[in-house]
Image (cartoon, rainbow, N blue to C red; front, top):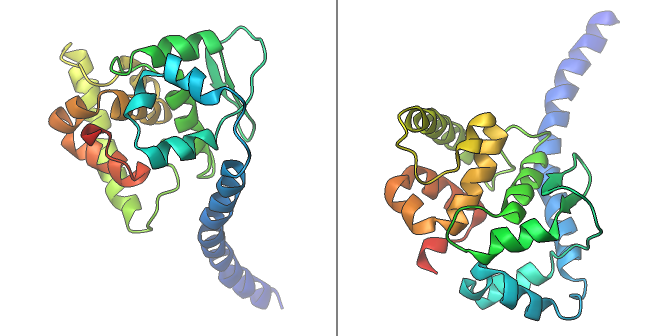
Length: 210
């Protein structure tokens, strides 16, 4: 009897894990679709046009999608936080300061949302849920290599594309790389083509062409 139980567990656990990875992306997509269908707050376009430098570059379809992802705010003393399995908290002052310059590589919104995307993959480890199972190995190889080369550039004071805060951990590396992917797209594509290609494949956009 004991042997039968162990055998059933050996079958059930891998099956459950496989089912989890099959179903979770669909659940995430449905949740995002519901968010996009909510009406945008009044004055949103005016606020974004006036304060967000990157907004004017976005293609029309991406602008429409962006409108469906807006959150609300309340007063608090912090630049930004992504709460585990909770909301993203942003300082409006830091949002405006970071978004005004669309080419400095600093954007607290992009940074914290990158953490939230990372969190969807069973915790934060610098690897979000990818679109294809075959992409995980390539992502790990490229991001691991890029992280090592990034650390070397920082030590030699030759780093220019990604903020040094990315050395803190792989999750922070993914977050600051996301900032640079959108705000220093041409520079990243030219100097870090492999990293740019991975982020382009994940985000399904090509900001260097905007």
